[in-house]
View 1 (spheres, helix red, strand yellow):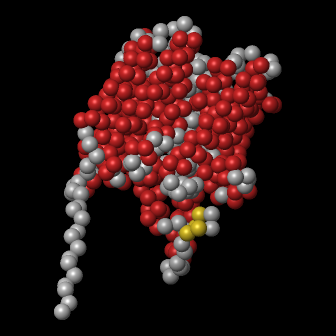
View 2 (cartoon, one colour; view 1 turned 30 degrees about the vertical axis):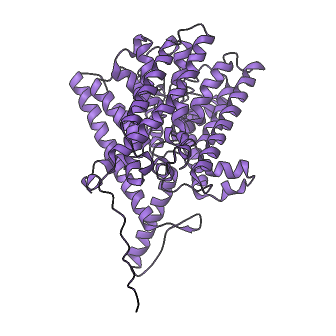
View 3 (tube, rainbow, N blue to C red; view 1 turned 135 degrees about the horizontal axis):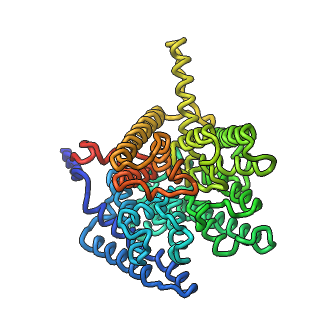
Length: 510
């Protein structure tokens, strides 16, 4: 007589989004962010300034994070579905925490909570747009905090926090893949902990290398304005492609040696970190040249620089080495979404402005600290268009799309198209909102200024044209326009999809 096998009991299915679990993880991440406030506090003590705005901000952030963590449970249950909610909330709250020192320090330029939040969101999203009208009037400690926010945001608050997630027994792979820029990022390691450690070490190493190079330039007399403080601050924002500067006129006052050095590191920061790791750490430099995205990245940088250079020479604005340097510096800065400037390109021709605005929509490499569309998506869109044309002529043709000799999944191709459509839609709505607000407030803003402001905010580029150009400020814009740009910076840094998912009814359904 045989005994019938006992039926297996199905595991209970989770219903809907575990909101409490997501908030529990958010609280844990904010708790660790509070440590960052100790650095500007130390700078304040070193320069004889008041450290209490930073200590108080750190205490408030830690207290809020701990309270949120204690009131909720379940961060170990966070999965891919909750991951979108976590990264969206974290970026909003991190920017709020970053605004606290601006408000508590009593800085006259940032007394408005909206302005303080704008500046903080711009920093953490590595945008580099500013509402400050007297940057050099900031205290050393507040200027350092402003630069540090971009460095912390460069690799993503979540990616930095992934180093501690294994200790919390939280599976961080879903969060890493949700936050990592680009449709596909090469997997360097098996575990998220190893990936986070290697990316972070490379990030720190490149920052230290640039800081050392700039400090040496100052020490040997090639740039009298470059000291250790300036070198560290500008290295933070170069490697993060953040664009904030301690100087009101960005890199205009620094020497040619400094500007050429920064160009090299902007290009490096705009390169896929996975490729950089393989090329530099594993000593396989040929990997770079074999990568389709990297080759197009360099080609577009060269093309953009050439167009700007040709226009500068044609209009007799600059000549010789200066023309070459300023053309390359500003084209590279714009395409890598860094946002530095070596000259006020508002004073150049309309064609140079149009060229730079076009570069805002290109971006640099996926897997880098940059924003915008990213070069790899342009590569794939070109391949999709070519396939569609070929299949129009030969309907029976089966032609999978390849990237670096590997077949790209059709879902990934669909994701690229969806992203680009959402990106264009968000840009258009943002430009419309900014221009409508400008008309309502009677602010003198040209259509091209509103278009550039929307593109710069969504692409995390930073400065636009006109009154918000590289030597200007977004301060004249109205509150509604600033809120629009805050939203654009936020969704641009999150690459739109995680935020768009949260707006669907299917996401919240069981």
